[in-house]
Image (cartoon, rainbow, N blue to C red; front, side, top):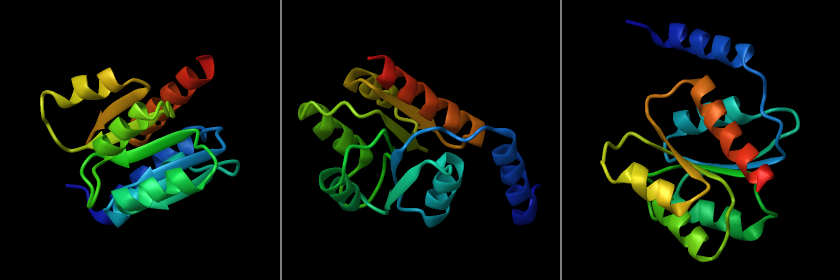
Length: 146
């Protein structure tokens, strides 16, 4: 069994082995401080502005108050407003910013719902740094090609 120190070293190794994302603005939202820190470390780079929210209301405020984001990464289950509700509202308002939803849920309808909403991807926990970065990269490349 891996202890916390071994786990941190493993994460550092994964981070060092993968190239940073080359984007300008990412909004990340998670109610778990450790998950939020991991997302910030994994998706950050010297040319990336990361804005953080700890619940759905804060994420909505970020999305309304600032210039457009290149990517939104949010947990599905969060206090006040869930990530999936935010995605649905954005799509109804014709906002097609790429959204990467992360979840530990195993609801069979969730993948199909996210696919149907468009320009979004669901990433199931636990996931690795390289898997997170690949999913974010795929969404942003798809947005650039549209």
